[in-house]
Length: 332
Image (cartoon, rainbow, N blue to C red):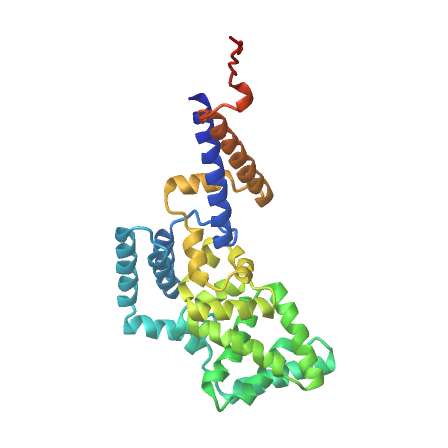
């Protein structure tokens, strides 16, 4: 009986270790411990309407119960219903005045000049003069202005370089991304080949259409190079709430994890554990590396199997253990 109890214990350890390894693989090593719906409320209180709407949709997408899913859908509908005409007008005006859009309407206001040729000509003249005179022109702004001029007659393309310039001016781009993109821009300006700059702006435009300016600004803080932007763009096009929600709820760690998945929605569901007990267990073993969990799984499984085998009743004895009776045969 004791052996059976020990076998059950070791089997449970093996099961938990294997389950955690599988969960980590699906979640890309991410663990969401906060509550997305509560985060959506905080964003709404702060006036970040687009981000609150995406977070509410993320909560619905990763919900584990019908009640939780229904509450998240109701909150998302409430947020959408709050987008009144007066709110749109105020957002447009603030975007035009500050150049820092917090939603799509504010984005349109901030780009009221850059969507026309005057903004690109101005930036080409200013940054080109600085580069020629002192060598400290902003290559990123210069290259984006050149691309903006080339796409002036195509507003659906022109907004991407214009929004990128806005992000650059307002500090919404991460330092590493700026350095990486600036190297590409410098080569484009000196060589006259803007194809790579165009690819980056295209990826950026795809992500902006999927997420919206304010949520994208939150994500771009954690994007380090054009390759990461391409992955974010592809995943955001398929599932905007998952990309934004994962990035915000993991403090940007999800951006690196996106390289290991083709389905951000599946990763998001795996990153949110199904119960309070599962979250507690995940936190407890978070410091354990994968190799240690693999060792626990193999060792526990082996010990459990040996204990079960030892506890099983012997059905037959070996022939050497069976006594042989001999009879002396006597002749009559």
